[in-house]
Length: 130
Length: 130
DNA sequence: CCGTATCCGGGGTGATACTG
DNA sequence: CAGTATCACCCCGGATACGG
Image (cartoon, rainbow over all chains, first blue to last red; front, side):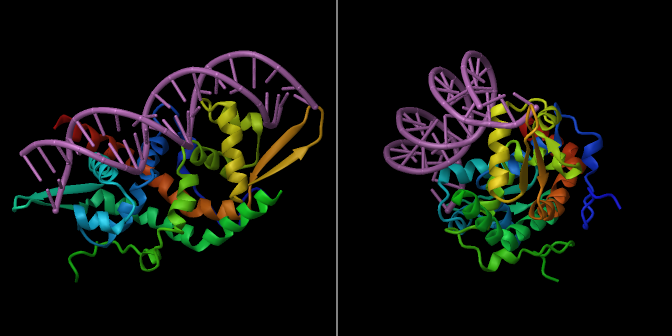
């Protein structure tokens, strides 16, 4: 067995075709790796949210950033925006099928982050001590 | 069946305990969601790299950003830095067990990005047309 | 309720030059 | 080869005010 191979297989199909001028990692991760997008996607994985509900679910997001992040997610096809012309109007945001399919692998990273948060924090303390 | 539940189950353990003041998503994704970290982790998933090799593997990264990103990854415990006191010196970067375990779920997102890159680009074109 | 417009400060990023 | 130092820039993001 090759010593470079980990005990857990990692398959990265991308390695063979990685093109830095038209890079899916940059194109996709650039959005979902932003400051607010992951948290919004997590909330929306539960159920559709109205604008104000979403704002309450992420307490320290500004109205400006909430609007802007939702627009970006909508533009990329992850989130659908539905306006109900009530008075006052209400707007509902929900994951699209594409957004839901993204959340499958993304939830793996999120759960990893939760499980290994302490290990990362410990590594930082060790590094900063030296 | 609950209409809110997708055909593909998504389990987010984090939903029950999400604490925004000490948030693993922010703490972990903040690093690996950066501009350069994902690309470096992809390269390092193959094999250890020396500084210059890594630089060649990501052609448009500056020396400054390569150093800084590697330091951050080292600090979080994802990458190990080994100095060989040859002349001139050579430095090798390799994934740690923690980094390798991160790459398991991360590779899922990366492969998703590759598979769905075109769908995302199409969604953008559609959105921008309106 | 759900935005948009404007201003502004700070940090991330690149370019360049220098060192062991 | 593998960095560090410094400068300058730009854009993200917060605060605030206003509008449909």
